[in-house]
Length: 295
Image (tube, rainbow, N blue to C red; front, side, top):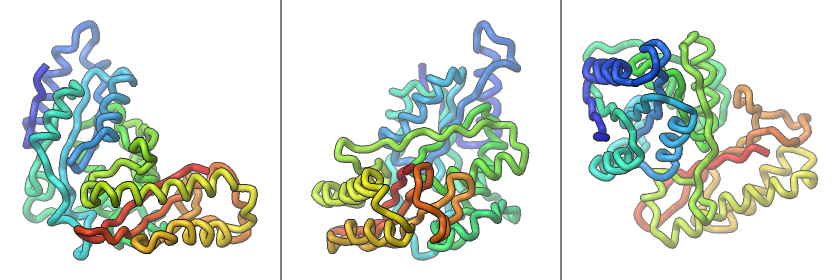
């Protein structure tokens, strides 16, 4: 089976239509489409989402690669975000993906584009405060992609915890006819959460960065010791910043429903979302790493 690569919305919709017509043993309206949106530079975490789509019974699996400029701030890494389309297409081919949607910026944001999606409940979320405008960009591009592809199920990784909350909210609020499936974070054998940005780190730096997950696990395993959120956050910060190359951007202890921070009076308990962003000052550049753990 060859990978069908579509660069325009029109060609993508035609490809999905033709694939639906060719699914044997099912009427057209019962054919299910699974969708995995990505920004490329794929790794095993992305491929595991493709596999989840197949395991979920999707008849057609669509993956998109689009580095979305509207979710980057001026001081972020849009211009240097890693790209390797040749490798990505081989990964998708090997995973038996049906269709790759590979639009350019003009296809998604044509001249005079002026409509954006804002999920207002994300405003107080720490990732939103740290990256102003980020979730407006995420919500806008995901809404557009869901309306273009029209999948039955869309698959996202848990590592981007606040993004998952944002997407689930917009799908519900806008009555988009699509199920959102959140899949477990895929990790290296060391425990480091897989990320395209890990490529910014040397092999030795990636080993050092495993301290992030190890520290989070330590907190989870000793949860009963923490009576307040500030005590937990301070302990985690101390553990991670014991490596002088790492500096906390933020540590969040939040609701799994809306991403809002728990209050100091709220008991630290299982089910809360522990997420963070850490700046790693590496040999090549400063890299922002994120991770999440459901307590």
